Image (spheres, rainbow, N blue to C red):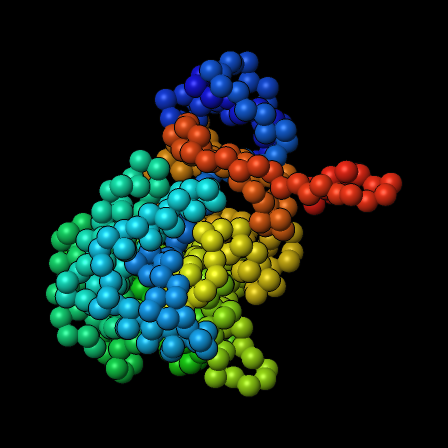
Length: 424
Ligand code: FE2
C-alpha cells in the first residue's frame, strides 16, 4: 500500500478504522487491516472525512476586499455598487492571482471541490477566461466547477444571454440565473424557462441564485421546480439562497416543499451571507432570512451550505473554512439536535458532493483517496472547534498539514496544555 491511515474515526460513528490507499484510491477500509503502507499515519482516534465541498462561491470577486474601497455600510446594496466600481478595473492577472490564493487557503482547509459562479455580464468575459485558467491550474488538486452567472439579469442586461452561451462554449460547466433580479415577476419566470430550456438542450446542470430576497411573494423556486420537471432535469438543478422561503406563508410552503422534492431540485443555503444580508429592511424583530433548512431536509430535499463570499465587496470576513459555514448554519437554523448537528456536517461534505456530481467521492473501497484528518474526534466536535485540518490528502498524496491546536498554559497546579477537547 502507498499509505495506511490507522485508528481513524469516521463521520458515521465507526471507530478504530484503518484506511489503506493504493494508486490514489481507497483499497480497503476496516478495523486492524493486515497490510503495510510505504507510509503510515496514526489518526489516534481522530476523525477522517472525505474533503469539504463548497456548493456556492464567487471566485471572481474573492479577496478583492478594499478594492477600490471597503464596503462602509456592510450592506448588499453598497456591495453591488462596489462590485460595479471594481468591474471595469479588473485585470485577468489580478483575478487569477486572487483566485489562486483563495485555492491555497481552500486546500489548507481541506476544501477540495468548489462550485463558483462567474459573472458573464461583462462583454469581455475577462472573469470567465481567468477562472477557466484557474480551473486548469488547480485541476491536479482541486475540482473547480464554474457556473455562468448573469449577475445583472439574463433578460435585464443587454447581451447577457449571448455572453452566457459564449461562456458555456468556452467550457463553463453550469447554467446560472437570477430570476428575482429581473424587472418583473413575469420576466423572472421567463428567465427561468429560457435558461432551463437551454440547459436541457445542452445537457447541462443548472444553479440559479433564486429568491435571494425577504419578499415572501418572490416565488421563482416554484417555476424552477416546475420547469425542472417539465424538461426532465431532475437531480441536475439547484436553487441557491431561497431566502424568501424564510418569510413565506406556512400554508404555501407546505405545498412548495413536496414540489421541490418531486422535482429533485437541490437547495443551497449560504448561512454566513444570509444572516448578514437578509432582514436589512426590518426594525425589530429582525428576520434571520436563511431558507428553511431543517424543513427542506425533512421533506427529502438535498441541502448544502455554501460559503458564497470571502473578503469581497459583500463580505469582509471568511477564510475558506466550511466548518465555519456549518457552524453558522447550525446556529441560524437552530439545528442543535444530535442528528441535526450531524446533518450540518453532511451539508458541507456529502450533500454538496452529490449536487456537484463529483465522481468517486466518499469513504469506501474504490473511492478516490481524498481525505482530511481533523483535530477532532467527531463531526460535532469538528464543527464546535472549527478543527484544524491535521492532514489533507488528495489521490493518496499529502497536500497540506496543520499543527493541532494546543495552548500552553502557565497556571499554578493546572495542566501545562489544553486542546479544548473533553478530558475524562
Ligand atoms: Fe451567490
